[in-house]
Amino acid sequence: MKKLITLLFATSALIVSVFANVAMAHEYSHGNIAIDHPWSRPTPPGTPMGVGYMVIENHGDRDITLVSASTPRAGHVSIHETQMRDGVMRMQPLKSGLVIPAGKAVELKPHSYHLMLEKLPKPLKEGENIPVTLEFEGADAIEVELTVESLDSDMKKPEMDHSGHHMDH
Image 1 (cartoon, rainbow, N blue to C red):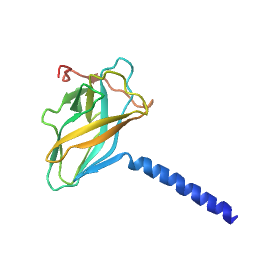
Image 2: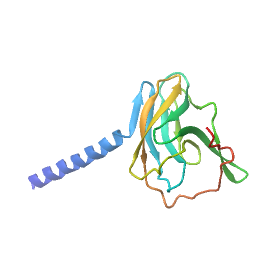
Image 3: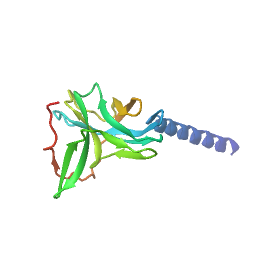
Image 4: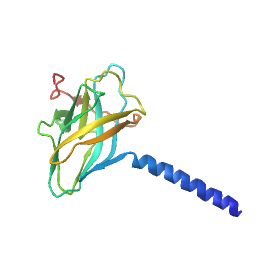
């Protein structure tokens, strides 16, 4: 019985450490910036745009601004905001960047702030890791990887207006 308990404990500890390593691999930090759970969605063939989401934490005492991002997987990356106006979701680029207030976190998530990966030469595939460099004003750049996660079949897809989005970067 003691051997069985020891085996169960060892197995549980191994499982916990594997999950902890997976979680840790999905967090990045540099200086006063911490990035939690950077992720994306798979794109259908022929779709030239993808998205990037994450939580950006500013542990410093001064505001910083996410001013740009880049990846070898896209021709251009821009920072966007989605807002509901007149019953329609509208997306527009943030030309001045995204401010991360001192001591606060800002979440890039569906129907809110997000990175727009434009001019994709090939689809983003589930399980793929997309390297992204985030450039800040007031802080050093940080390298992260967006994990392409499966589509959520229950997610409602509101009508999107891309009129503020231009592909001629």
